[in-house]
Length: 255
Ligand SMILES: [Zn+2]
Image: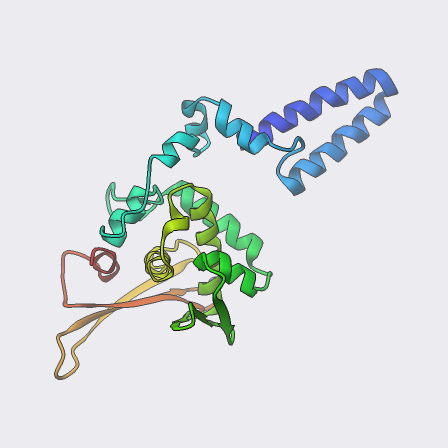
């Protein structure tokens, strides 16, 4: 947003110059083309996303839901902490009232999913997701990492959500590149339990929890996250025990 405003300002100044030099028609045409480029590309002058992040004061960036580069770098992922603590540490999770995605991450994730929705998740996307070249895709919702670690997603949309979340986490400079593939998947699964909207259709997300008490095992709480519009399963988990005070998905990220 700050980048877009700066670029529209630049386009307006250049358009006025074009009016003076080449006439009103050319000036208006220039301005319309510039707006189209900003709309499609996000900016007119290359480098402004970085420049606005670097030079606009933190208080101004805060108005747009952005943080300064140094604030981001201060955070890092501690593999010994719980999933919740790690997600809070890297600024994508808040525990103000209840654990939830921060607004800025939820919005960025929604936009990224809308853009990626119609793209194919190829092996290059999987390599970026896991941070290793040793990844092969198996069917639509499976992958083998480092030759021995088999990973299955509950749906293609769940896989897309992990690909986009991984990209966003890498952009945040939170040490994501140092996180091992199995830890990445654990964090991404934790995130997906708290999706606000469906990555496939932007529909509302339903979280259902039920208890299962199978013989010879301790009772479990089963968590299922699905889209209430298109019915796509988005995440699931199971935690041991039943707790009236904390929901299953909260206990899942506090293990
Ligand atoms: Zn949906």
